Length: 219
Ligand SMILES: [Mg+2]
Image 1 (cartoon, rainbow, N blue to C red):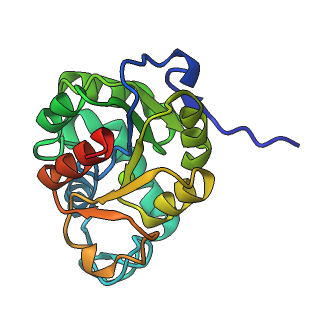
Image 2 (cartoon, helix red, strand yellow; image 1 turned 180 degrees about the vertical axis):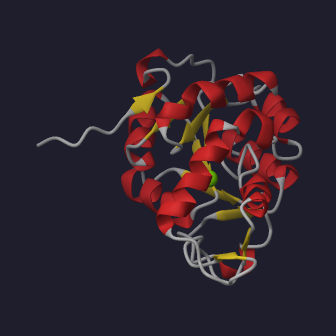
């Protein structure tokens, strides 16, 4: 039996290529806020996220009873956030201007693990915010996709994500990729697990832009 891993967005072979360097960017918590609107939505359900450790399951609890929401309930909240993302998810401060400047030295591709069913909502949101770079939404491992991209982009490649396991996966698949950690919401930062060796930690888009420019230009 084959497990189908859905993907939506352009084929790697069809992506426009203008630069030697490539920046591959996760979306949730890198390009768009996720945790902040997730917390706002939880409040509508009478629940609150406690930043006690680096996970959602178990840390989201009912305000009235203290009972933890189940994984299934959290999946429902996440799905509603993605359905309503156009109204709820805002660009991370400074991302548009930083990417406009960086696009002069590197090609840019968004790579999101969001369920590809919500591709159209996300594409609309990004276009409305003038974040018009190509997006691939996939259930495949990000490492596999970055490996395909590395077949076409022979210059430096940077991968930006908020989740250390995604950074690990990309490092395993494509050892030469430069890793940058960026997580818009600061509240989980004290609990972050170890990062792959050499990961650059950016606290905001000003720091991320400087790091990505150095990587792209080899400076
Ligand atoms: Mg993310």
